[in-house]
Image (cartoon, rainbow, N blue to C red; front, side, top):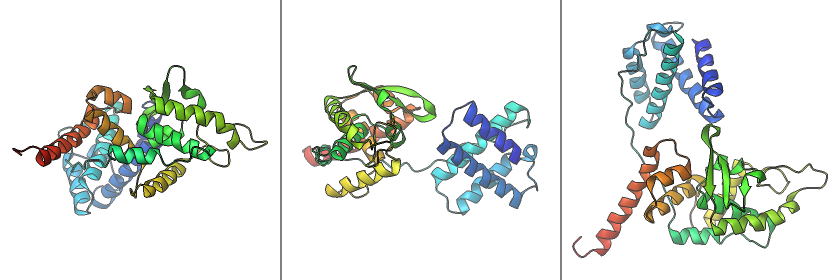
Length: 297
C-alpha cells in the first residue's frame, strides 16, 4: 500500500501541481490512515479489502482521539481522493468513500482589523530607512492586494508592472493571477525600489527577489511574520499575522459593496464558498451596528 500512496503523491505533484505544503499534509493524513489499518485491520493493508465500514471506523477513531472536526474532514478528504485515484488506476474496484459524507466542522469567523487599526498599522514603518520602506511595501501588499504570505515572499521584481498599476501573483498550485495596485501601494513600491540597491551587499550577485532582508537575501516567511508581529504590538494587536491582513482586505471590500466574485478573483480562492465566509463577518457587523443604533432594535 505504501507504493500506491507514493504513486498517488507523485500524481498530485506532477499532474495536479499541488504545493509542497499540501503534499506534506496528504502524506501525513494517509500515513495515519495506514497506521490505523495496521492496528485495526489487515496486515499489511490490502486496498481492495477496505470498505466504507473501515473508513467509518477510522473517522470514529479520530473523533475518540480528540481531533477537531476540521482535521477529521481533511483526513477524510485525503482518503477519498486516494481511493478515487486507485479506482482510476484500476487498483481497486470501487471507492469506499463514495457514499460517505464529509464530517461537518465548526467554522470560526476570521479575525480582522478595523479601518482605524489598519491606518495605525500602515503608519508604523520608518520610511526614512530602507528597511522601513520595505516594511511599508509588505504591509501595503498584504492589505492592499490581499496576498498570502507565500505569494508575498515569492515575488520577484519582474512581477511588478508599475505602468499598468498591477502585479502578477503566483498562488496555490502555481496559478497566476493579476492583482491591481492602488495608489498607496504603487507609491510605496516606487520608493522601495529606488532604495532597494542599498540592501544588495558588495560582491553578492543581485537576486531577483522583490523583498530582501538586511543581508541582501530573499526575505523569508518567518521574517515577514516577525516583522508583522512587531508592528502588531505597537498598535496593541498581539498575534498579528499576514493571514489576518488578508481577512481584513476581504472584509473591508465586502463592507464597501464589492462584488463577491470580484473578491474571490482578487484573493485567488478556488471556491466561492471560501470567500462567502466574509459575508457572514459583514452581516454580523451590520447586525451589531443595527442593535446599537436603531431605535427599534
